[in-house]
Image (cartoon, rainbow, N blue to C red; front, side):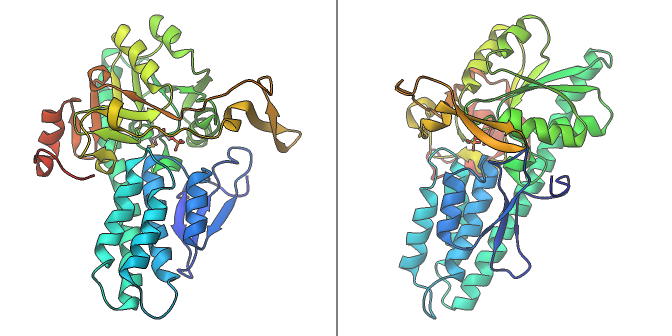
Length: 373
Ligand code: MRU
């Protein structure tokens, strides 16, 4: 490790205000490398290639991307068409996480009508910084609300270990700070609750085995990495008290898109009467979509992410081929868990059921029938 990761955000604006600094998540946990993003093309590449990943962080990166677009605008004025075009390019970097569209549009809406170029740049910077700070604060509040659920389980178990299963990485690396799914876990750990996390390895890119396990280990939280298919068995044997996952896009009716395999965990949890919670900031709700299975775009990624597995060999990160080279491979990156399988949402405003009514009880300003994301 080149640096202590504990207090670092996965993204920040450099002191010279011209460069966005990110942690290259592709290389964790074996190498801690910080990269510079200087242009919109750099931002798009970092999102596409998953140097940065996780819905809230993708949003923050997109917001800084719109700032870089303004900063690097050719000429002395900044045209609306240019800003819209650059914002559009950023928004198409990845399809599933709605935070990307939400954050880019939020910055754009603040600057589109501003005439003075200096002001455009300043406002874009302020808004991007605000989004990163707000996401951090939202995750802290998600931790406070989710803590109550873990406290209750701990009380019912008379202080015995609370076992929580999570999928992918919905930790601080994915979210600016605290994480979504991990925020209640960190909060429980901080209050002295005996907590242990089952970490799904999360093939093909192993965000669980690489990133969640690393984060939890750095914080001192007990955890065990398991194969993606182990959860059902553990649930049948009383070894899981609750599941908490993050999400990339959740409809206003409560359907949840998250990393591929989440749906199967939700099915197993339902069959075993285990609470299945989804932790998310309001930026991850898509207020325009009603039916997650039919309407949420599911990313299909490069089949080579499945063909090759990456790990450390003699202090060098290497990739090795797994299936026969000629076998057809399909890489679906997300799935949708229907609302009926979700026990509840943990948001910055509190906990609600996975129903339109209860979601809108927490977010009454979204009560109009159909809205844009
Ligand atoms: O493909 P990724 O690594 O960007 O997928 C991330 C996830 O699926 C996370 O669970 C989700 O973004 C929630 S992050 C708080």
